[in-house]
Amino acid sequence: MARFFNASVLVFVVIIALVVTWIASGVLSREEPQPLVQRERAPTSVAAGWSRAERIERILSLYGDLEPQQIVIVRARTSGIVEEVAVQRGSFVNPGDRLAQLSLDDRPARLARAEAELATAERDFDAAVELLERGTGTRAAEQAARSRFEASRSALVAIQQEIENTEINAPIEGTVNRIIADVGTVVTVGGEVVEVVDNDPLIGVVQVPQYAVARLTLGGPAQVAITGREVREGAIRFIAPVADAATRTFRVEVELANPDRDLPAGLSVSVRIPTEEVIAHRVSPALATLDEEGNVGLQAVDENDRVVFYPVDIVRAEAGGVWVSGLPERVRLITIREGPVSEGQQVLVRESPGRFGLAPLTATEDEPEMPETTVGVQEIPAGDVVQ
Image 1 (cartoon, rainbow, N blue to C red):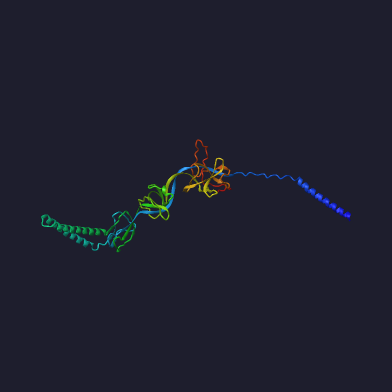
Image 2: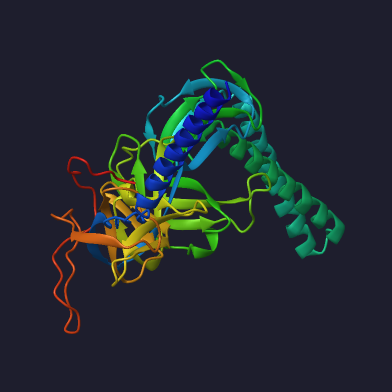
Protein backbone atom coordinates (compact mmCIF):
# COMPACT_ATOMS: atom_id res chain seq x y z
CA MET A 1 0.00 0.00 0.00
CA ALA A 2 2.79 2.43 0.86
CA ARG A 3 4.55 1.45 -2.36
CA PHE A 4 1.47 2.45 -4.40
CA PHE A 5 1.18 5.78 -2.62
CA ASN A 6 4.81 6.64 -3.31
CA ALA A 7 4.36 5.83 -6.99
CA SER A 8 1.33 8.13 -7.32
CA VAL A 9 3.19 11.00 -5.67
CA LEU A 10 6.07 10.48 -8.01
CA VAL A 11 3.81 10.59 -11.08
CA PHE A 12 2.12 13.76 -9.86
CA VAL A 13 5.46 15.47 -9.26
CA VAL A 14 6.65 14.52 -12.75
CA ILE A 15 3.49 15.95 -14.34
CA ILE A 16 3.84 19.23 -12.46
CA ALA A 17 7.45 19.50 -13.51
CA LEU A 18 6.55 18.94 -17.17
CA VAL A 19 3.83 21.63 -17.06
CA VAL A 20 6.14 24.17 -15.45
CA THR A 21 8.83 23.40 -18.00
CA TRP A 22 6.40 23.83 -20.92
CA ILE A 23 5.12 27.16 -19.62
CA ALA A 24 8.60 28.44 -18.94
CA SER A 25 9.76 27.49 -22.41
CA GLY A 26 6.89 29.48 -23.98
CA VAL A 27 7.56 32.60 -21.93
CA LEU A 28 11.26 32.54 -22.57
CA SER A 29 10.87 31.98 -26.30
CA ARG A 30 8.23 34.73 -26.85
CA GLU A 31 9.54 37.73 -28.81
CA GLU A 32 9.25 41.23 -27.43
CA PRO A 33 6.17 43.08 -28.78
CA GLN A 34 7.01 45.44 -31.61
CA PRO A 35 5.52 48.95 -31.62
CA LEU A 36 2.82 49.66 -34.21
CA VAL A 37 4.02 51.48 -37.24
CA GLN A 38 2.15 54.79 -37.56
CA ARG A 39 1.02 55.38 -41.12
CA GLU A 40 1.09 58.99 -42.12
CA ARG A 41 -2.18 60.22 -43.56
CA ALA A 42 -1.86 61.97 -46.90
CA PRO A 43 -2.95 65.66 -46.92
CA THR A 44 -6.50 66.39 -48.10
CA SER A 45 -6.59 67.49 -51.71
CA VAL A 46 -8.31 70.76 -52.62
CA ALA A 47 -8.69 72.89 -55.72
CA ALA A 48 -8.01 76.61 -55.40
CA GLY A 49 -8.21 79.59 -57.71
CA TRP A 50 -6.78 83.09 -57.58
CA SER A 51 -9.10 86.04 -57.08
CA ARG A 52 -8.26 89.73 -57.03
CA ALA A 53 -10.44 92.46 -55.52
CA GLU A 54 -12.11 95.13 -57.62
CA ARG A 55 -13.60 98.50 -56.80
CA ILE A 56 -17.39 98.33 -57.03
CA GLU A 57 -20.38 100.29 -55.81
CA ARG A 58 -22.22 99.16 -52.71
CA ILE A 59 -25.89 98.89 -53.65
CA LEU A 60 -28.80 99.43 -51.27
CA SER A 61 -31.73 97.32 -52.53
CA LEU A 62 -35.19 98.03 -51.16
CA TYR A 63 -38.78 97.24 -52.08
CA GLY A 64 -41.51 99.85 -52.27
CA ASP A 65 -44.39 101.24 -54.30
CA LEU A 66 -44.94 103.77 -57.05
CA GLU A 67 -46.95 106.79 -56.02
CA PRO A 68 -48.27 109.58 -58.27
CA GLN A 69 -46.72 113.01 -58.29
CA GLN A 70 -50.02 114.52 -57.15
CA ILE A 71 -53.61 113.52 -56.45
CA VAL A 72 -56.15 116.34 -56.41
CA ILE A 73 -59.75 116.08 -55.32
CA VAL A 74 -61.47 118.90 -57.21
CA ARG A 75 -64.12 120.45 -54.96
CA ALA A 76 -67.02 122.78 -55.63
CA ARG A 77 -66.43 126.41 -54.63
CA THR A 78 -70.14 127.15 -54.64
CA SER A 79 -73.28 125.13 -54.08
CA GLY A 80 -75.58 123.80 -56.77
CA ILE A 81 -76.78 120.79 -58.72
CA VAL A 82 -74.36 119.08 -61.11
CA GLU A 83 -75.88 119.73 -64.53
CA GLU A 84 -73.04 118.37 -66.66
CA VAL A 85 -69.89 116.29 -66.29
CA ALA A 86 -67.63 117.25 -69.17
CA VAL A 87 -65.04 114.45 -68.78
CA GLN A 88 -64.89 110.70 -68.39
CA ARG A 89 -62.70 108.49 -66.26
CA GLY A 90 -59.33 108.16 -67.95
CA SER A 91 -59.62 111.51 -69.73
CA PHE A 92 -56.44 113.56 -69.82
CA VAL A 93 -56.93 117.18 -68.79
CA ASN A 94 -54.80 120.32 -68.72
CA PRO A 95 -55.02 123.12 -66.17
CA GLY A 96 -58.19 125.13 -66.81
CA ASP A 97 -60.07 122.44 -68.73
CA ARG A 98 -63.77 122.26 -67.80
CA LEU A 99 -64.63 119.23 -65.70
CA ALA A 100 -68.26 119.88 -64.68
CA GLN A 101 -71.00 122.52 -64.65
CA LEU A 102 -73.25 123.40 -61.71
CA SER A 103 -76.71 124.90 -62.05
CA LEU A 104 -76.96 128.71 -62.06
CA ASP A 105 -80.33 128.79 -60.24
CA ASP A 106 -81.18 132.43 -59.33
CA ARG A 107 -77.70 133.73 -59.92
CA PRO A 108 -78.54 135.51 -63.23
CA ALA A 109 -81.29 137.48 -61.46
CA ARG A 110 -78.96 138.35 -58.59
CA LEU A 111 -76.40 139.47 -61.13
CA ALA A 112 -78.92 141.80 -62.85
CA ARG A 113 -79.96 143.28 -59.50
CA ALA A 114 -76.35 143.84 -58.50
CA GLU A 115 -75.65 145.58 -61.79
CA ALA A 116 -78.69 147.87 -61.33
CA GLU A 117 -77.78 148.70 -57.74
CA LEU A 118 -74.24 149.51 -58.82
CA ALA A 119 -75.50 151.84 -61.56
CA THR A 120 -77.75 153.70 -59.08
CA ALA A 121 -75.00 153.95 -56.48
CA GLU A 122 -72.61 155.27 -59.09
CA ARG A 123 -75.07 158.06 -60.12
CA ASP A 124 -75.66 159.02 -56.49
CA PHE A 125 -71.94 159.18 -55.85
CA ASP A 126 -71.30 161.36 -58.92
CA ALA A 127 -74.08 163.75 -57.84
CA ALA A 128 -72.69 163.99 -54.31
CA VAL A 129 -69.24 164.83 -55.63
CA GLU A 130 -70.65 167.52 -57.93
CA LEU A 131 -72.63 169.16 -55.10
CA LEU A 132 -69.58 169.14 -52.90
CA GLU A 133 -67.56 170.85 -55.59
CA ARG A 134 -70.27 173.55 -56.00
CA GLY A 135 -70.30 174.15 -52.28
CA THR A 136 -73.94 173.14 -51.85
CA GLY A 137 -73.23 169.61 -50.62
CA THR A 138 -71.54 168.27 -47.54
CA ARG A 139 -68.51 166.04 -47.05
CA ALA A 140 -70.63 163.54 -45.08
CA ALA A 141 -73.12 163.15 -47.92
CA GLU A 142 -70.27 162.58 -50.36
CA GLN A 143 -68.68 159.90 -48.14
CA ALA A 144 -72.02 158.12 -47.66
CA ALA A 145 -72.58 157.99 -51.41
CA ARG A 146 -69.04 156.70 -51.89
CA SER A 147 -69.64 153.86 -49.38
CA ARG A 148 -72.86 152.75 -51.12
CA PHE A 149 -71.07 152.79 -54.45
CA GLU A 150 -68.17 150.60 -53.17
CA ALA A 151 -70.59 148.16 -51.53
CA SER A 152 -72.61 147.80 -54.73
CA ARG A 153 -69.46 147.21 -56.72
CA SER A 154 -68.31 144.52 -54.28
CA ALA A 155 -71.70 142.81 -54.45
CA LEU A 156 -71.48 142.70 -58.24
CA VAL A 157 -67.99 141.17 -58.14
CA ALA A 158 -69.19 138.58 -55.63
CA ILE A 159 -72.10 137.37 -57.77
CA GLN A 160 -69.90 137.36 -60.87
CA GLN A 161 -67.36 135.16 -59.05
CA GLU A 162 -70.11 132.87 -57.82
CA ILE A 163 -71.42 132.40 -61.37
CA GLU A 164 -67.88 131.73 -62.57
CA ASN A 165 -67.47 129.11 -59.83
CA THR A 166 -70.39 127.12 -61.18
CA GLU A 167 -67.96 125.96 -63.86
CA ILE A 168 -65.52 123.48 -62.28
CA ASN A 169 -62.12 123.40 -64.00
CA ALA A 170 -59.02 121.22 -63.70
CA PRO A 171 -56.39 122.74 -61.40
CA ILE A 172 -53.52 120.52 -62.65
CA GLU A 173 -52.43 118.45 -65.62
CA GLY A 174 -53.34 114.82 -65.22
CA THR A 175 -55.77 111.98 -65.73
CA VAL A 176 -59.32 111.85 -64.41
CA ASN A 177 -59.35 108.93 -62.01
CA ARG A 178 -62.83 109.24 -60.46
CA ILE A 179 -66.12 110.98 -61.12
CA ILE A 180 -67.33 111.57 -57.60
CA ALA A 181 -70.42 113.72 -58.25
CA ASP A 182 -72.56 112.55 -61.16
CA VAL A 183 -75.18 114.60 -63.01
CA GLY A 184 -78.04 115.49 -60.68
CA THR A 185 -75.95 115.38 -57.52
CA VAL A 186 -76.39 118.31 -55.16
CA VAL A 187 -73.07 119.62 -53.93
CA THR A 188 -72.30 122.26 -51.37
CA VAL A 189 -69.25 124.46 -50.98
CA GLY A 190 -66.28 122.10 -50.62
CA GLY A 191 -68.14 119.10 -52.01
CA GLU A 192 -66.03 116.56 -53.94
CA VAL A 193 -66.66 116.42 -57.68
CA VAL A 194 -63.74 114.88 -59.62
CA GLU A 195 -60.40 113.27 -58.75
CA VAL A 196 -57.41 114.08 -61.00
CA VAL A 197 -54.11 112.18 -60.78
CA ASP A 198 -50.78 113.45 -62.10
CA ASN A 199 -48.47 110.52 -62.95
CA ASP A 200 -45.56 112.50 -64.34
CA PRO A 201 -43.26 112.11 -62.63
CA LEU A 202 -43.94 109.01 -60.60
CA ILE A 203 -42.46 108.64 -57.13
CA GLY A 204 -40.85 105.41 -55.93
CA VAL A 205 -41.28 105.33 -52.16
CA VAL A 206 -39.10 103.09 -49.99
CA GLN A 207 -38.34 102.84 -46.28
CA VAL A 208 -34.60 103.01 -45.61
CA PRO A 209 -33.12 101.47 -42.44
CA GLN A 210 -31.45 103.90 -40.09
CA TYR A 211 -28.00 102.35 -40.57
CA ALA A 212 -28.04 103.20 -44.31
CA VAL A 213 -29.81 106.56 -44.51
CA ALA A 214 -26.61 108.51 -43.80
CA ARG A 215 -25.10 107.15 -47.03
CA LEU A 216 -27.85 108.69 -49.21
CA THR A 217 -27.70 112.13 -50.84
CA LEU A 218 -30.39 114.28 -52.41
CA GLY A 219 -30.21 114.14 -56.19
CA GLY A 220 -28.26 110.88 -56.09
CA PRO A 221 -28.96 108.29 -58.80
CA ALA A 222 -31.22 105.28 -58.35
CA GLN A 223 -32.53 102.45 -60.49
CA VAL A 224 -36.19 101.50 -60.27
CA ALA A 225 -37.12 97.98 -61.37
CA ILE A 226 -40.87 97.85 -61.97
CA THR A 227 -42.74 94.57 -61.60
CA GLY A 228 -43.36 93.10 -65.04
CA ARG A 229 -41.68 96.04 -66.78
CA GLU A 230 -38.28 97.49 -67.57
CA VAL A 231 -35.75 99.15 -65.28
CA ARG A 232 -35.76 102.95 -65.32
CA GLU A 233 -33.37 105.56 -64.01
CA GLY A 234 -34.40 107.94 -61.29
CA ALA A 235 -33.03 110.37 -58.71
CA ILE A 236 -33.53 110.80 -54.97
CA ARG A 237 -35.74 113.84 -54.40
CA PHE A 238 -36.63 113.52 -50.71
CA ILE A 239 -35.10 111.99 -47.57
CA ALA A 240 -37.30 112.21 -44.49
CA PRO A 241 -35.67 114.26 -41.71
CA VAL A 242 -37.43 112.20 -39.04
CA ALA A 243 -37.68 108.42 -38.74
CA ASP A 244 -41.00 106.61 -38.53
CA ALA A 245 -41.64 106.08 -34.83
CA ALA A 246 -42.97 102.54 -35.32
CA THR A 247 -40.40 101.12 -37.75
CA ARG A 248 -37.38 103.40 -37.19
CA THR A 249 -37.03 103.72 -40.94
CA PHE A 250 -36.84 106.83 -43.12
CA ARG A 251 -39.13 107.59 -46.04
CA VAL A 252 -37.11 108.14 -49.21
CA GLU A 253 -38.64 109.23 -52.51
CA VAL A 254 -37.09 108.50 -55.90
CA GLU A 255 -38.40 110.60 -58.78
CA LEU A 256 -39.04 108.67 -61.97
CA ALA A 257 -39.83 110.42 -65.26
CA ASN A 258 -43.04 109.20 -66.90
CA PRO A 259 -43.68 111.62 -69.79
CA ASP A 260 -45.86 109.19 -71.74
CA ARG A 261 -47.78 108.28 -68.59
CA ASP A 262 -47.57 104.65 -69.60
CA LEU A 263 -46.75 103.59 -66.05
CA PRO A 264 -49.61 103.64 -63.57
CA ALA A 265 -49.15 104.43 -59.90
CA GLY A 266 -49.49 101.69 -57.31
CA LEU A 267 -47.07 99.19 -58.87
CA SER A 268 -44.54 97.36 -56.70
CA VAL A 269 -40.95 98.32 -57.39
CA SER A 270 -37.44 97.33 -56.42
CA VAL A 271 -35.22 100.36 -55.91
CA ARG A 272 -31.42 100.02 -56.16
CA ILE A 273 -29.43 102.95 -54.80
CA PRO A 274 -25.62 103.06 -55.12
CA THR A 275 -24.22 104.42 -51.86
CA GLU A 276 -20.42 104.10 -51.86
CA GLU A 277 -17.45 102.41 -53.51
CA VAL A 278 -15.80 99.45 -51.79
CA ILE A 279 -13.10 96.87 -52.55
CA ALA A 280 -14.68 93.44 -53.04
CA HIS A 281 -14.29 90.01 -54.67
CA ARG A 282 -16.91 88.38 -56.88
CA VAL A 283 -17.43 84.73 -55.88
CA SER A 284 -20.01 82.00 -56.04
CA PRO A 285 -22.27 81.82 -52.97
CA ALA A 286 -21.71 78.03 -53.02
CA LEU A 287 -18.19 78.64 -51.71
CA ALA A 288 -19.41 80.11 -48.42
CA THR A 289 -18.78 78.10 -45.26
CA LEU A 290 -18.94 78.55 -41.48
CA ASP A 291 -16.19 78.58 -38.89
CA GLU A 292 -16.45 77.04 -35.42
CA GLU A 293 -18.13 80.19 -34.09
CA GLY A 294 -20.73 80.23 -36.86
CA ASN A 295 -19.26 83.14 -38.81
CA VAL A 296 -19.90 83.13 -42.56
CA GLY A 297 -16.75 83.25 -44.62
CA LEU A 298 -14.55 81.73 -47.30
CA GLN A 299 -11.64 79.31 -47.03
CA ALA A 300 -8.35 80.00 -48.81
CA VAL A 301 -4.80 78.62 -48.82
CA ASP A 302 -1.72 80.61 -47.86
CA GLU A 303 1.78 80.47 -49.35
CA ASN A 304 2.49 77.32 -47.30
CA ASP A 305 -0.63 75.52 -48.58
CA ARG A 306 -2.39 75.78 -45.24
CA VAL A 307 -6.08 76.54 -44.90
CA VAL A 308 -7.04 80.09 -43.87
CA PHE A 309 -10.59 81.21 -43.00
CA TYR A 310 -11.73 84.77 -43.81
CA PRO A 311 -15.05 86.12 -42.44
CA VAL A 312 -16.80 88.11 -45.17
CA ASP A 313 -19.66 90.57 -45.62
CA ILE A 314 -21.91 90.56 -48.68
CA VAL A 315 -21.60 93.87 -50.53
CA ARG A 316 -23.81 93.16 -53.53
CA ALA A 317 -25.68 90.20 -54.96
CA GLU A 318 -26.01 89.50 -58.68
CA ALA A 319 -27.41 86.70 -60.80
CA GLY A 320 -23.96 85.20 -61.43
CA GLY A 321 -22.49 85.55 -57.95
CA VAL A 322 -22.00 87.79 -54.96
CA TRP A 323 -19.50 90.52 -54.17
CA VAL A 324 -17.94 90.16 -50.71
CA SER A 325 -15.55 92.22 -48.61
CA GLY A 326 -13.18 91.06 -45.88
CA LEU A 327 -10.68 89.23 -48.10
CA PRO A 328 -7.14 90.34 -48.94
CA GLU A 329 -6.78 92.18 -52.23
CA ARG A 330 -5.30 89.03 -53.76
CA VAL A 331 -6.29 85.63 -52.40
CA ARG A 332 -6.25 81.97 -53.41
CA LEU A 333 -9.73 80.67 -52.63
CA ILE A 334 -10.61 77.01 -52.17
CA THR A 335 -13.23 75.95 -54.70
CA ILE A 336 -13.32 72.14 -54.33
CA ARG A 337 -12.54 69.90 -51.35
CA GLU A 338 -12.16 66.13 -51.22
CA GLY A 339 -13.26 66.24 -47.61
CA PRO A 340 -13.73 68.65 -44.71
CA VAL A 341 -10.81 70.96 -44.01
CA SER A 342 -10.21 73.30 -41.09
CA GLU A 343 -8.16 76.41 -40.49
CA GLY A 344 -4.43 75.72 -40.27
CA GLN A 345 -4.69 72.30 -41.92
CA GLN A 346 -2.01 71.35 -44.44
CA VAL A 347 -3.57 70.53 -47.81
CA LEU A 348 -2.50 69.40 -51.24
CA VAL A 349 -3.46 72.13 -53.69
CA ARG A 350 -4.28 71.82 -57.37
CA GLU A 351 -5.38 74.65 -59.60
CA SER A 352 -9.08 75.11 -60.28
CA PRO A 353 -9.77 74.31 -63.92
CA GLY A 354 -11.72 76.58 -66.21
CA ARG A 355 -13.05 80.11 -65.88
CA PHE A 356 -16.34 81.26 -64.49
CA GLY A 357 -17.07 84.65 -66.00
CA LEU A 358 -14.73 86.66 -63.74
CA ALA A 359 -11.79 88.77 -64.83
CA PRO A 360 -8.54 86.76 -64.95
CA LEU A 361 -5.72 87.59 -62.58
CA THR A 362 -3.08 89.76 -64.23
CA ALA A 363 0.45 89.14 -62.95
CA THR A 364 2.61 92.11 -61.97
CA GLU A 365 6.35 92.44 -62.40
CA ASP A 366 7.13 91.12 -58.91
CA GLU A 367 4.48 88.38 -58.90
CA PRO A 368 4.69 85.04 -60.70
CA GLU A 369 2.38 84.45 -63.62
CA MET A 370 -0.71 82.66 -62.33
CA PRO A 371 -3.13 80.63 -64.38
CA GLU A 372 -6.22 82.52 -65.49
CA THR A 373 -8.40 80.69 -63.01
CA THR A 374 -11.23 82.49 -61.37
CA VAL A 375 -13.51 81.57 -58.53
CA GLY A 376 -17.03 80.39 -59.19
CA VAL A 377 -19.44 77.50 -59.52
CA GLN A 378 -18.03 74.47 -61.27
CA GLU A 379 -18.80 70.84 -61.88
CA ILE A 380 -17.49 68.56 -59.13
CA PRO A 381 -15.62 65.39 -60.18
CA ALA A 382 -16.96 62.09 -58.87
CA GLY A 383 -15.95 61.56 -55.27
CA ASP A 384 -15.37 65.26 -54.49
CA VAL A 385 -17.43 66.86 -51.75
CA VAL A 386 -18.19 70.55 -51.42
CA GLN A 387 -18.27 71.73 -47.84
